[in-house]
Amino acid sequence: MNHPIIIAIDGYSSCGKSTIAKALAKKLNYIFIDTGAMYRAVSLYILRNNLDWQNSTEQEIENILDKITITFEYNPSSQQSDTYLNGENVEEEIRGKEVSEVVSEISQLKAIRKRMVSLQQKAGIKKGLVMDGRDIGTQVFPNAELKIFMTADPQIRAQRRFDELKANGKELTMEEIQSNLTSRDHNDTHRKENPLRKASDAVELDNSYLDQEEQLNWVLKVLEEKNLANSHF
Image 1 (cartoon, rainbow, N blue to C red):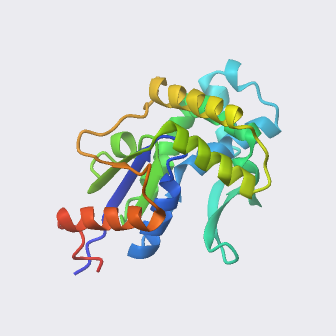
Image 2 (cartoon, one colour):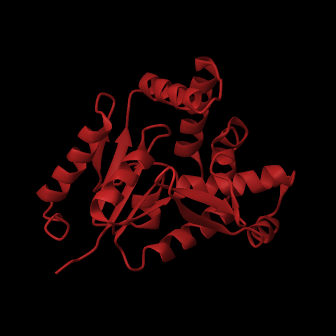
């Protein structure tokens, strides 16, 4: 008998959380939800509409959120899910420099985190879900059957981000990327609402020197060790 579970993956920026989460979801035939993309989509909407989010009240932020719909649709060409903001494919735009520079600050806003967490929890009602972010194992799904906390050497994270942007035709200096990652790490770990931290029952994955296949095998081994694999393989 199949007993679907929830797998929560948290960790620092540019640790490859989404990459391993997608691979794991595909292997287990689970749903994958990129929570970072949700916050990026909200940030993009705010930037596009020149909204003064830094000086807005909680009610004003909630009114903004009422105008936003975020969905995910499978893209056959990339074999991945693209992010849609109010029906528009914004997958490429939300990964750009402009959004990256503000997403950590915008995602700290209480009204935004509250709304996003609610949506994320609704997505996990039936389980069979892999979700990655910053507070999945601590706030969104504190009772998840498997929690993974990902980390990697800061220099390696910066190089990965540099390579990713370059491959997508976006040119940023290593100094700019390192500055952005340092800022995001500080915002993620020091924000008032649901800061990034390792859950007490999470297993830590330092993937500094692991390729994607090795990371996937590592997680599958953890599933077996915790007797969570019988339903899936």
